[in-house]
Image (cartoon, rainbow, N blue to C red; front, side):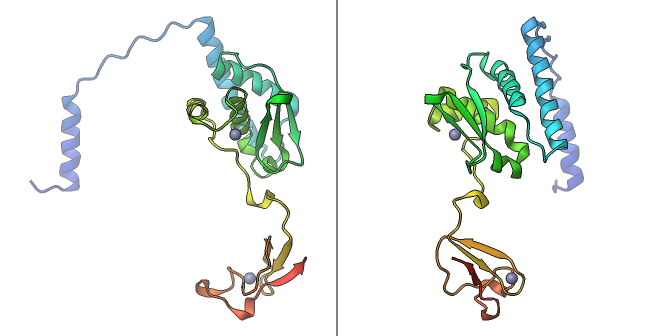
Length: 205
Ligand SMILES: [Zn+2]
Ligand SMILES: [Zn+2]
């Protein structure tokens, strides 16, 4: 038989019929522990929704501490030792953990750009309380609790550029660490080729 869309669909339906539906396993009896855990889950989902609705506002430190406690119970059975949490307005990365100071720093600038990532950053830094390096054990934990594997950064937050170039046509800014000799605006020059009409001008040194 020639495989058409209709025939493969019919075949799929037939195959599906061959499997007997398995009875669902009985639900795990709700203990106080699972009840608390479910409650925490719901709160965490509500947290994320609340931030998505208010992307320009970052949670206060007290709220970050509450999140820390919630995640500590939710993912680590409450075993992580207490740490301090601070925002850093100087840091250009998403977050950091300093074991010597027992301090989690949350990058303020980074999260002004990506406020929806703050829960992920906090979870990532919480794993650093157990594993300092991004080793295999760290990655396993990150996977388990759904945190990102790497400390994140954003190009615009990297060290300040030494040179600022600008397109004479569209005005697009090109911050660079090195001197550009033959460079034209990527947006205005067609076909990815240098175009003298759009040669970038040095604004600041
Ligand atoms: Zn990290
Ligand atoms: Zn341009």
